[in-house]
Length: 77
Image (cartoon, rainbow, N blue to C red; front, side, top):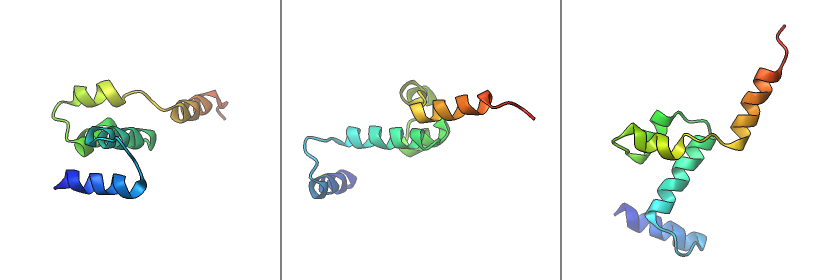
């Protein structure tokens, strides 16, 4: 069972009081922060409805906001 595997990883890492939902949210957040498109996050989390993914993970990380702001602030030419 996949939940047993997650529990075992938590045990080895010394993580207490974590749930499978916590692991899913962490994965979604990490994918988003890595710049993965929402469609990739949706597939990874097996969301049937794209709105579910967009509602939770469409917020960009501070680092990506700074990156894109720097790109548009650079003079052309």
